[in-house]
Length: 67
Image (cartoon, rainbow, N blue to C red; front, side):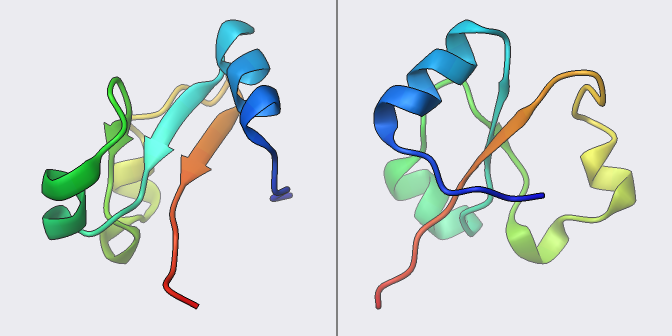
């Protein structure tokens, strides 16, 4: 179940072994991606692409919108 977390919580989760998933579009990723993140654009996220992630570790997904 997704939750919104603040920066300190993200740091803690990553320190504890969580994976960082960047779901920005390819253009947005090229412009401003997070170092070390697995990049799977949201429009391409499906069971096959998600297989790149370790099912035994939590996932922190990074995305944003302009609202």
